[in-house]
Length: 326
Length: 249
Image 1: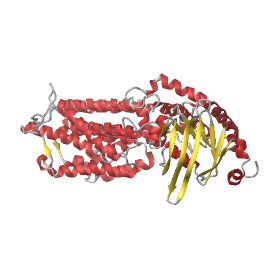
Image 2 (image 1 turned 90 degrees about the vertical axis):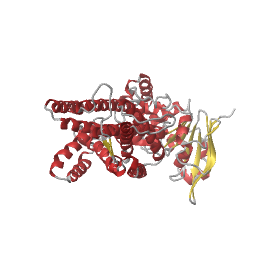
Image 3 (image 1 turned 60 degrees about the vertical axis):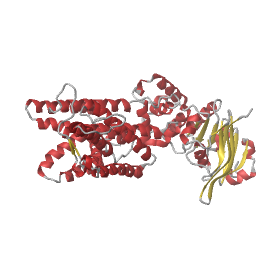
Image 4 (image 1 turned 180 degrees about the vertical axis):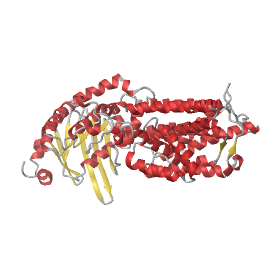
């Protein structure tokens, strides 16, 4: 546990030092790469609450990640083209202000995860996996067949959305914005898992019947966790659109759900920093192995199989003997 | 004045043609331990599950403290005062004994939906949980992870979890199963104390414990109550001897 805490500090240190080196040595590529890790880690932190801490095996978090992305893309697209988004109750031409986009993306993703959660949490096990997957795939196919916003080709936004008094087109500035969101996501996650509510949802993962028997409304608890989880993933999706200045149906695809799940499993489920380690490891593999072979995911699969067979508690679990032996 | 805190009328449940419980009528008075005995598969645990609401009944009604709770969900029944233990220890394995008890205290203290305060800093819950651990003689093991507790200690913890909810009635499903002599003695003394405030519907195979504790005993066989009475009445009942107790008593 002490080693893990030490490691967590190192992880944060690396997330700071790599972009700083990129800045000093004028290598913006490393800044962008770290920003990507941070954004994917935020999505992972969201899923980790549901999957790692509450035992909700959601295979549909791409729905929230992608919706956050599309909300950002659509608002920005309308603002940049000065096109009316809706005319009632007021005329709204979209916006390219991050401070307006974020709350809208958060609200839309919270509402969406509430609806999906309400319908899917009445099931469990494989049915829950399938129903969350089905919702995400519905949105995926909807986005493909929506020509207004690019359909299969996706939607480009030519300028990154703006933030007061800073230049968001500067990679290091945008990295800092994302880093702040990462710290907020970690803080929210940390506070939640150590609260009374956190105690309830972690107990549900292990023995829902017992939790019900002491009078705790498990459905309500799971729904709240699912909404918080989906909202955090949606926020990550919003940042991801701004990072790439592009959003396409691929962010809603089941591959994205699988990748977010891989970040959580690789890093270590129910470990606060697990998704950061998982996302970083994923990107490192993509960048290193990907340079040699197109089929780098074969090796990722092999690592995942070995991890599930021999480590289970993820990369961070390697440093926690007790958990690793469970 | 009605002395019945729990009143079950004509409760029946069938799986196809098989009747698990058949027009069960049983009640529980204030300050009473009412034991329910019967052979394996007689329907005792299914009856408990029907009372707590985890198994839906086909017909019948359940009245708790003058309130008809027949249509309430399992969580709603737990909230209004039905607390149970499980036949096989059902705890949160990765939580310590203390954390298990604190979890049980959450609903009663309206703390479940407290999102950002660190639960470990809640002195009130900590104090209450430690008092319960003292009562069940587990205070020395409060920090031990529940999965590492012995079988006997897990049974005690089960009872502790039920105690923490501060219910109107307890439904204890074989709480003494697998306990040694000392463990059973601790449990018997604890139940005698508990019943002064809260009545207990007790399912138990340990007849010495049942006869030491019960004010009334009901015998269930093939899903039907075949006899109800005091310990002496049950001991001398021919039918009960036939179906369950045997002739050695």
